[in-house]
Each structure stands twice: as C-alpha cells, then as structure tokens.
Length: 103
Image (tube, rainbow, N blue to C red; front, top):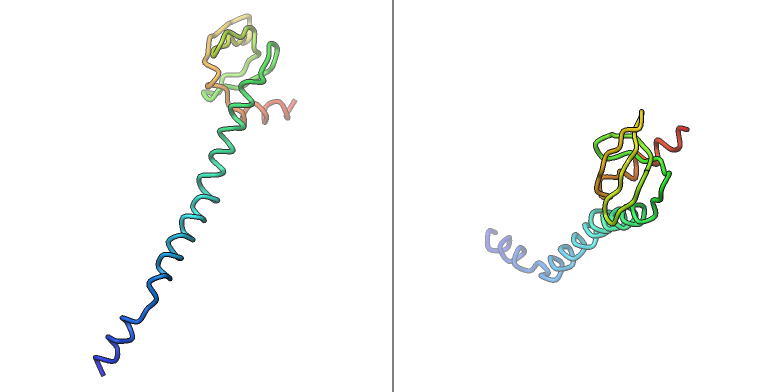
C-alpha cells in the first residue's frame, strides 16, 4: 500500500510547476510593477508641466504657488511673501490635485 502512494506522488507533472511559477510572475507584474511604473511616469509628466503661478503642495505638506522655475528646482511663494527653494521632485501630485479640487 505504501509503495502505491509513493508511485502516485512521483507521477505529478513537472510542467505544472513551471506554469504555476510563470502565472505568479505575470500576476506580480500586472498588480505590482506595472502600476508603479505608470504612477512614476504620471508624476514625472506632472512635474514637467508645472509653470509659474501654479498652486502646488509639497510632499512635506507645504502649500504655495510657483514663483520661479530654475532647471530641476523651483521657488515656491508662501504666505506673506515668503519664498522657499525646492526640488521639483518634492511636488506631490496627489496632494496638489486634491488641494486644487477643493478650491
């Protein structure tokens, strides 16, 4: 009886393991990697399209308007004429869109 069980276990299809592993990779790509790539692409496009006078929110939560653009940095004007220099990568696309939709 024991030898029959061993023979049944040895007859499993080895291709099933490769197909299963491939399916896991495909699922991982479509649910993890692809959305992150799309989000990074959208963020880059958003930061490239900002212009003087746009209201933005940084990833640190600072609200203000773009006063000057200089290469990969910008100067943000906050209340009472305060001006702060940030990298363009500090702009939060989601927070900026959310703040601009509330107005």
